Image 1: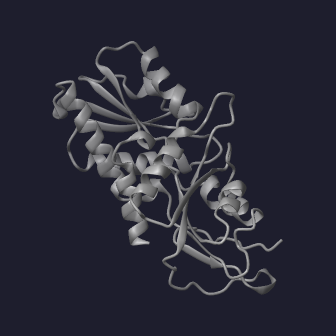
Image 2 (image 1 turned 45 degrees about the horizontal axis):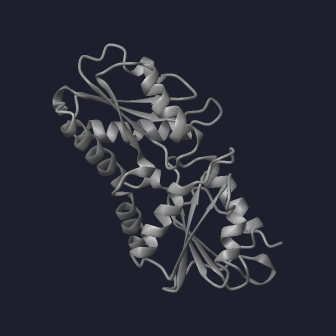
Amino acid sequence: MSWVRFPSPAPNFVARGAPGGGRLPPHEFPETFALLLAAHGERRTGSDNQGVAQLAARLQALGLAPAVGFGFVKGAPSISEAVRRLAGHDLLVYPLFLSDGYFTRTLLPRQLSEAGAFARGRTVRLLPPLGLDPALVDLVLDRARAVARARDWPEARTELVLLAHGSSNNPASRRAAERIAKSIARRNAFARVRPAFLEEAPFLDDAIVGSRGPVLVVGLFAGEGLHGGDDVPQRVAELGRPDLAFAGNVGAFEALPDVIAAAIRRG
């Protein structure tokens, strides 16, 4: 098995299969590539990961690539299955992750290699994950503003909480949420912007303590798995506050395909 190790940081790395499993220098990416959406996924019973499938279909309709596939580091289809389905194409891999940590820097490159993505003569390009895209700030801000308007909540009195996964073992999720929150706060659109987490402090109830107006919660999740699909709306509902509303998860925002399309065109 040939092994191509992605350097750190991984974004915008171009690897090409070579005799003996070596690595050739980066070169201009060919036009006849296939787009592979790589996401976290969900293995639990009843999960069909349809959100990512629908996103792939929308990107295919935009004509961004001759073929568009999707695979999951956890769930079906796997990254290996997705690579096999796109056999014969060079690959442009878009990581549908909100942070740049273990999954994007270690697990995804490993699974691509184990799937044989770096066959002789095949070019594989790994783009920066969604969480590093500067357009993500506008995506979140536009959605929050739309929900605030729909509820007649003045932005200047409304607080915004970005709810992410968080982890005591890896700071990537925390850093991503804090970075996005600071970028949105600099726009001075909402009364206060702060991050909260499912797996570490501050938790959602901590983040809204002392709030003096309505609060919007945006989930920093790219899929409809256990956390994004169940935990986030459930946490919001459990607090039972009429002035607290869930604005949805980033992965389900209507404008997300446009953000991804722009990133792919930038290449």
